[in-house]
Length: 310
Image 1 (cartoon, rainbow, N blue to C red):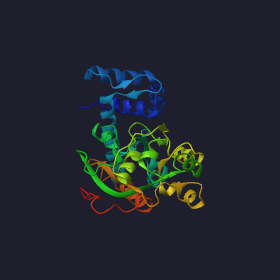
Image 2 (image 1 turned 45 degrees about the vertical axis):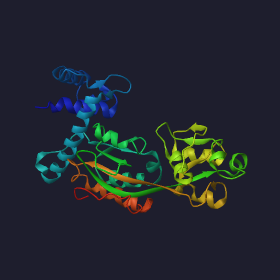
Image 3 (image 1 turned 180 degrees about the horizontal axis):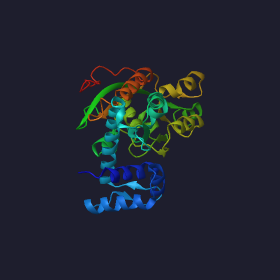
């Protein structure tokens, strides 16, 4: 049997970042929290929480925290249907969701706000490249993810959302400095690009789609969606920016589309753990509505069929 008081203590330590904060949230002493965790770790023969500031779960601890998220969602639903069971108490379910930064900066926050404002769940959003958010699902670190993966992760249901459209942009001064003779593979090889991190392949994907080849180009590393736009406006480099964020700048001439009409569409999918999918139907609906407004319909052949009734 799982020691649920201890498992809940571990989940709260991870949620709040410390043993002391977890103790306050659960209404017990820090020594009681420490003892629960120590006894549980000794029983399992493995460390579940890396002590520090903040405390972080180990890989095994993250799996346990995900289980507690699932339990919390199921408990909340049961208590709504059976009020005689009592209140949920101090422990509020925290839902871990992974997304790419560009979705969070453009359309996804509307969905999270809609869901979070009406529910009793807390949201724990982590950011990674859309090609890698599915890894967090596979590793048991999150309960749902916005992903570019077009097939369901094991144990998850998948729903196509549409495509996030990007335009390759730069300032007029940048174009004059680096691309005055035209946007070609040769000129782009000398023009600094902006990339989010080492996982970011958007710029390279656009070059391959537009020119049919890969290029090596000088790169500025800038891990911020909004900073991408500002850096392009300031002439630091060229980059793929969400079209919705730069359309006004393109219309005013503050930015120039490197190859007019050569947009890049990134299909996105919502993947959610099947165990809690029925209980989190409101979250899926909110994400679907926001995606319908903020994304473009996926190209024919890009959209996966929805699985498990989503």
